[in-house]
Structure formats: structure tokens, C-alpha cells
Image: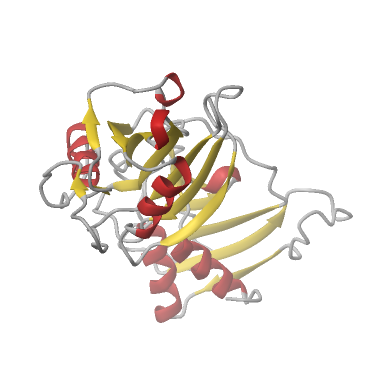
Length: 298
């Protein structure tokens, strides 16, 4: 069998093309308002699948039409993942089928990556893939994407696998927010290698104390807004720098809660008394501590 092609597109509606009417994969409901468990994630995945338009003359089938389509081209390594799949036979050759699907994806989404290779089935059929980013997701969703895999079949037709994958965030652990009585933040940057290291060009270690009400409020809001961490396997390069934001009731007072950045986009939260938790970093928190430190680009 010749190499297969895969496209990954984000779906939140579908534009129509010229010629014969496209075939809708299904008739799913509207986008979920909030996703907090597998049931809601699966409902959103089904909704994404239902908005896909296949070329006129396509035929839905119940199972993978070829062995190369028995799995999605990629899968996030987390237990909090819902995957809804559909299969079809399309009356276009491989390249034309993928081009049709790319031309009929909704506007408003940006390409994240493209390339070739199988991420799950090495040694089977080569996959060419395109990943589109979904920018506007329901509350609780860590990521949502539609994966469209196309492989050549007989008579100039193609076999298609459609996967909508939705991962959702677990509930945020209670008690990982800044106490209401705190008024001061101590923000520091620490080099995690020796002073002679130049890996990543880290900034010089230093700290600042923030008491200005406006600047303090921005740091507190960013810390309180940190999301929960998606469970799964993490493997990341070593960080050369650690950023720490400690909140206190006033200058020189004992620390109530500390947020410390780590590898893999994590933030370790330590509450006075020794209780800890791990959250996911986001851009608002990064911007807040870099602005407090006066770092370039903040």
C-alpha cells in the first residue's frame, strides 16, 4: 500500500465548497459549555466530528477499511483523553481527498505543525500530517483537535479515518490561591546551573519585592488563575532558570504561599505548613513575573 496522508484540522463549523453538496459525517449538537469529565469530553468530540464535510459520493463505514487506519496518527499521553472515530470511503485519490478536506476546513484556526511519519504505527504507512490549533475552547478543555488520516484504496478512491480528540483538565486542588490578607510579593529568578553556565542564556539571579497595589494585584491574579495540570507522561529538557513568586502579609513577614516554576511547564505551589501541589504554567503568569523582574520582553 502506498504511503498515507493525514491532516489535522480544527473544526467549529464548516464552509461549503462549489459543486455537489458535501456529505456530513453526522448531526451532532452544539459545542459544550464546560468540559469536566469523560462524558462531556466525548460529547464535544462527537460534536467536532459531526461538523466535518466529506466530498459528495463519500460513504461512511463501520470499521477501519484498511489496516493502516486502525489507530489515530497520534495520541496525547494522558488518561484524560476522549477519542471519537469515524471511517469513510471517499471517491477521490489520496492527494485530492486531503486537498478537499484542507480546503473545506473552517476559517479562523492556525497551523501548528506539518510533516511526515507515523507517530503511533512506525513501519506501517507513512503519514503526512497538518495540525491546526483550536483557539477558542470550552472551559475545562486542555486541547481539542480533529485528525483526518487518508490512505489510497482501489479504483482511485481513498479510505479515511476521522478522529476527534479532546483532553480535559482535572479539578483544581483547593487551597492553592493567595490568601486574602497578603499584600506583598517577593519575585526572584534563580539560576539552576553554575554561574559559569550559559545554556539558554539565563538572566542573573536577583529578586524584587512588590508592594505597589496595582503591580501586586496583577501578580496575585496571575497566580490565582493558574490552571490545573493535565495528567500524563512528561519529558522535557532541563531548565536553566527557576522563577519564584512568594506571597506574604507584608515585607519581612513569613511566606504564606510560594509558586515556583519547573520543567515541562509546571508550577510547584508550596503552602505554609508544607502542603504542596502542582499546576500548569500559563502566559499570564509568565508575563506577570517577568514584568515584576523588569526582564526584556515583559
